[in-house]
Image 1 (spheres, rainbow, N blue to C red):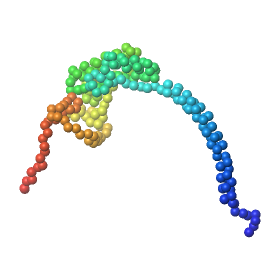
Image 2 (cartoon, rainbow, N blue to C red):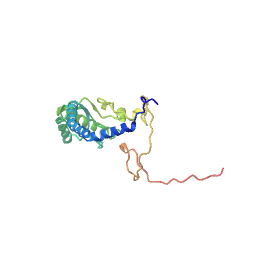
Image 3 (cartoon, one colour):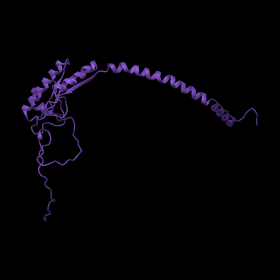
Length: 218
């Protein structure tokens, strides 16, 4: 066999590599740890400094919901609204008011709806007196948009009308854009005589057990 052609001694090379790693392991670890200590705080501060101006310039648009009678969620006109406006003023130009709105409690009661609409307008005036522009006022939901065009103001919020016309007095001017699918989410027992739903539109009757049909011979 030609002496000039020899198979590499991988075992010998492996031993040399192992000795080199064992010799330089501690210095390399110390060097890596030192670099991490030196670079990490600097990078963290630079990232925070870069993010701070961007966050300070971020504009947040909000709308204030006024509780005019539904008593579900919203700010009560008067002292509570005034306190909120003071907090918004302290936040500076980052907070931009996009609108003031509310929700009808019972569209079957015209007088109640009128009172709620008037209270919303007075609340918007309170917001303006505090130095805020109010570019949008709205209170009508789907039923409100059908019954009370005088309260359309700057916008209406359509929910049910996107998927169906008026259930008892269809107007024929709504083109349904989607189908509605639902599932049972919760089951509760209610007492007979309790009012359920918007406007108390449903009243449970005393429970009556259902009996299976009697078989008949034909």
